[in-house]
Image 1 (cartoon, rainbow, N blue to C red):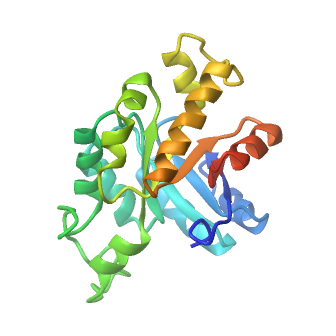
Image 2 (cartoon, rainbow, N blue to C red):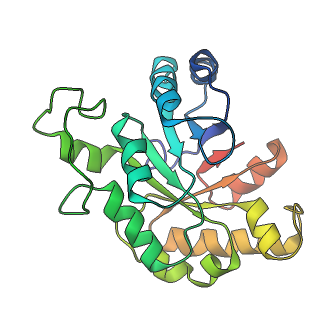
Length: 225
């Protein structure tokens, strides 16, 4: 809703298995917390409590999974998170697989179990529509294969945020870690422009406040630190 109104949402990645920390991040004013199960020790069981903590603090919880597998997408959403963030999506087919796993019919083929935290344990009649409307699907563009396929990825319905990973992009360009290099910045600018033209929100990682301000200036609205 904040991004749809033209504002910028600010969040952070979290690998600490402590719900109090996540709650405090929300109280501090962050809009979202990415519960990172790709890097670090978090499990899906831990993430369910962290999602509760985020909600108590007023932040959305987004679960970053470690691989683009339907069962991981499903579990990330069934715990009642605000969305799923999927790494290394590099083609139309991979983006379609993500949406298929994340959305209920008719948009996808998400497995139905209505007695989960996402369904308020009661199986409310509007559960599937509410999840389709409110749980975000975020896909990472992290390598030059994805950059080359950006138009076909953007053509896939059901994607909410295109997340440009500067560090993996730098590695793909052969300049690992040099996220301020003009080649990395140019790639982010070009992909941001294409995504916004396609009506998608754009996300990225900011290593510091200066980078966050630059990302916001080029139209990135989902900024994580």
